[in-house]
Image 1 (tube, one colour):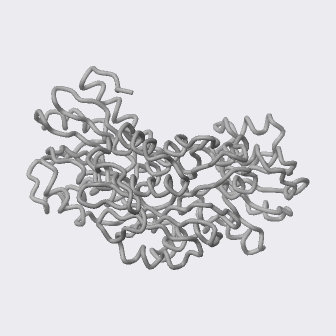
Image 2 (image 1 turned 60 degrees about the horizontal axis):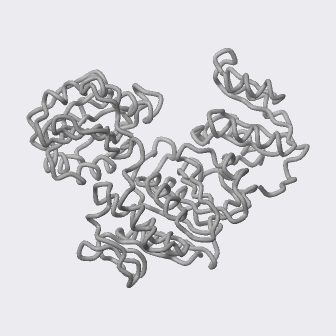
Image 3 (image 1 turned 180 degrees about the horizontal axis):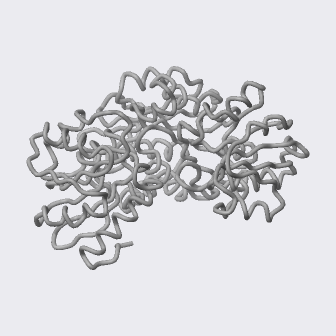
Length: 459
């Protein structure tokens, strides 16, 4: 960890707790800052706040009082999910107080190398694949995953050594709050339209994503999906060396698929069909990881071993188990239409689909072609149940059932399935209408599978 003096004896406000806020507060306290933590949850129901108070950190809970802005804070470290319309955030910016996120703080103390991964879909899988591949390097330090993947970057940065690498998943929310964060390698998996309720427009969302490369120089690398005119055009904004990856044959200058084989430049890596996790989207994730691994001089044998054995990240087209010749998959992380579409395209077998969730105002007609080609029956739930059902009807699906939630949908899906079918939760929606997050939604889906099958989840 680098020695950082800029926060010593300075007043810093940490806005919002959860993992990122807890770790940011502790790190700032360690760096000698006078830390104030503000969280909207009441103190009596807030074990995180209670723990920080016992550590000697000032805690204000139960709301976000604007009077906090009367204090002379040097910087505000906000939870990424708190919007910039929040009165304290807006007020701080009006007073020209810097507002950053925890990953910016982590990058300031990181003594190793930083690799950043962003995009609408595929971030977590790509981040994980990269770290697994980098750990096959000889005479090199350890690669750690961090960031939006569920591991606070500030915790990892404190233990990383100069020879280590922190592979960091960076959401658009996180990237809005960076100033000096500088990845040696930045990866853009793709950009579709999502989180527009937070960013206000697609243009703002794209701008947030592209902040990943804003501090890169000609000594760095920007790994970009080359299968869209828009993404190719966006790459021109980077000062780094652009390394493309393409599943559709648009470039052979980086990682690409050709005639069912995966290559890096002119080197054959492996057959695409030998990747253990299914779907074209996972071929794209693999190509992005291959590009980074090759830049970092990972032996081809290590790359191949990872891609042949990696069975997927939990909640991301995760294989759960097979029972009476039905395969169960948990894709709870599919919180938008494109993610569900990609998951469906990964299967040649008939799919019984469980879908629905938070209503963000959109409809689901764009999902209809994938439903028509891959789905035999649907069980829908949540605020968008009727909208998702309408997309199913548009696709010509005649078997559509309504259920209370994803757990009650499992026994219904079982009854509608036949040997050889795939039963998959891939909601195409966020979870917040019924569940605190997509992880809990996926976990409860798996528990419901265990009740139906009588089998514990395969690890």
